[in-house]
Structures are given as structure tokens and as C-alpha cells.
Image (cartoon, rainbow, N blue to C red; front, side, top):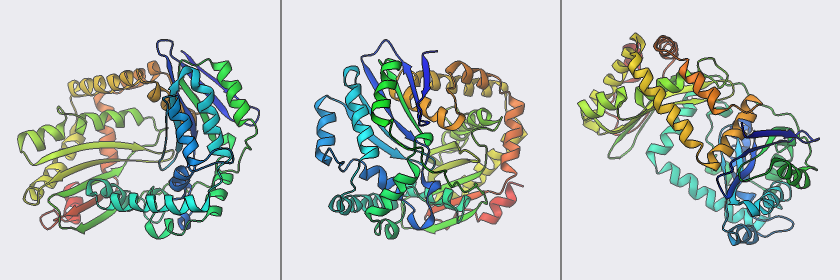
Length: 418
């Protein structure tokens, strides 16, 4: 394995995945905090902090940050999820020191200028508005909130307009100080990078980072339920899901295989039955999302008002058929898809860097491709059917938006699945 991991004296983990056949490197800082670590009063602060980290430090203006990375042809970006926040770059191998310098600077010396905050707050409010105007996007927020009501895991990553509109500099500074500690962060790189030299660079730019305070992570409490919103849209957007598995569950890879064979491609059950045979949808797929202590399995579909009446019962029937059993040929096909996806992703330094960082945050160690492929290969049809029954026995979560008059009522969905 080309992977090496070191830990600095302050607890910061530094990991590299060397690829000798490229001339570039992808690198970044992954912080093990996200939306689920926010108190309700500051929902959206992790995402706002992600934006504001690029808006000026003690040494660089917002323009200088963009100018320096682009002057060497590099790319700098970030994202926020429910459990993580990432700041990452891709550069030529010779420019790795610059990228480490910039990321270290924005994560430790951001000044959160008030004028910049005013401007960026307006940008984020536009982002929130855009999401609200995109039904096949915002429906997932409604689904999440219904599955995990009145808890951090159910709140939107972007926050709400009311809360974001009130953010002040101290809110961001306090959040960064309390959550961006060395022991809750991984600095990773993949590509043409020497591990020892990279560790020395990270030590120089992050060695003074404090360990941070312990995280207050509210335990996930899946509830399920029903959300419906009538909107004047061309399509009905429908989500149906169930409690699934966390990252550490023995059936984690079985859940990925189940999702793949059920709604993960053109040969999947949902695509063949609902789109190809019946012509009821343009878009339909299933997904399995895992967290540190829970997970959800779901199906998304977009369809016309007239077709919705037939579509939802068919989805329910297909779920029940899944519980009756799956063929080994389906499992083999899904396993081939999943293995190919994993191995193909390893051709990208960005994917390898992110996978390495996420594995260290979740499992505390690198998980090689060979180990993952072996675990996928160990899943058989019996385990998948058992998992399907286990998930569908949980309380359903439904979210529906659009012209919903013809959509099967929630209580009838529940009855049909029992």
C-alpha cells in the first residue's frame, strides 16, 4: 500500500497516498464537524464558516488567496456536510508547499472581516433561496428533517435565512476556535508527494494548532414520518425511506449493494420496472446514506401528477419483493458495479485523498481498496434480503412536493408495506 500516516505531537493526523504516475497532488484539511455539531440557534454556522475562511486572513486578502492559488494553475475549494467540513486544493507537485501554506492560513488566521461577512452572508442567503427554488434538491432537506425531527442531524446544512441573517463575527470565530482542533482534523494528500516532506510542511504550518475542545455530538434518533407540500410544479417529487445502517454496521457494504441492485443503474429493479416497463418516470434511484451512528435508505422519484397515483404503489410493491429475496446474478452484477466504481475512483488523486481522510475520521485507519473489495465479495443474497426486511420494518419516512393530489396517502403507504 502506498499510504503512510503520521501523527504530530498536537494530535493532528497527516496522511499521504503516493501516486508515482502523476505530476500533481490533491491535498486538504478534513475537519470532523458539520451540521450535526451545531446548536439550533446557529444552524448553518459550519457552512458559513466554510465560505468565510476564503475571505481574508492576517496575511492575505480574499483576492490574494484566489490570486496566489490560480497563479500556479491550482484549484482551491471547500464543502460542508452533516458530519464533516473540508478545505482542499489540487496543484502541481512543486506547488504543494504553497497549498499547505494557504490552507493552514485560512484555517488558523482568518479575520472574518465585517464587510466581507456582510457580502458573503448575502451570497449564502442567495444559495438558500436557490435551494428552496429547486424541488429535487430541497425535498432531501424535508426528508432529512422528517426522519430526524428536532435534532441537529435533521437540520439543513445551509441553515435558514433567519438564522444566517443574524450571524456575527464572534459566532464564526468561536465556532472555529472550539471545533477546529488538531485531534479532530486530518491533513491528507494524494499524488506526487513525499510523505516525510509533507509531514514537515504540515508541522511547520499546523504544529501550533491546539487540540480543541471535545465535540458535543447529539446521538441520532431516527423517527420517520410524513412531509407533504403542495406546489405549482410540473412534477411530483417523491422520497420514501427507512432507517438503515451506520458506517460501523456489519451490513454497511450489504446496504451499498442493496441500493445498487435496487435503484443504482439502468439494470436495477426500480429503473426496469418503473421507467422501462411502465414509463412512469424520467428519474428514479435509490440511495444509502450512512452516518457515524445511524443511516437512511431511500428512493427518490420525479413523475407527473397523473403518473404519481400508479408509481407510489409500484415502489411499495418492489420494496416488498426485495424482502422476498434477490438473485445471486443481481448480487454479482451490483458487486461488479460497486467494485468498478471504487477502483475507477482510485484513478483520481482527489478521490483518493478524500477517501483517505474520511477513513481516518470514521475508522481511525486507512482502509485499502483490496479490503473493501473483499468485504463486498463476502455479501450474498441472503444478507441483502435480511437487511431489506430489517430496514423496511422500521418507520417509513416520506417527503412529497408538487401537485400531490393523486399521491397515495401516507397511512396507505404504511399499510401497504406491512
